[in-house]
Image (cartoon, rainbow, N blue to C red; front, side, top):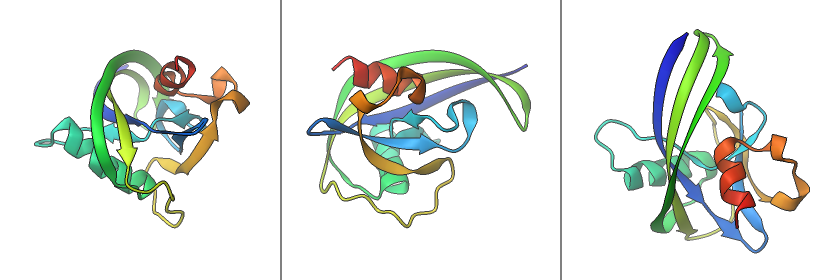
Length: 138
């Protein structure tokens, strides 16, 4: 079993009754909706990482970031490395974006794209643990 610690910064972005979510293409949450964001790279602040990830995953620029809460989850899964046990720690920010129009022609590394999603139309199994916690406890 490979143990992995994943520290990331993630965005909670709401517009009306919808949340901005990405659909995962790899990792433990393949096919599920997740919060936009990701790993904090060496030398980045959490805010810098989140701004970078938002542009990469959605094409949107953050106007304002405010730390909302932190979350922690442990998940076991299999990938090309074998059996993986990931401890994911997420710094969740409330984010205001400059414009809510998503970019559709982006190259995605671990996302199938971003979309505005009405959470009431989804089942709990459709969401990653972070997305479930943040969206269902509004």
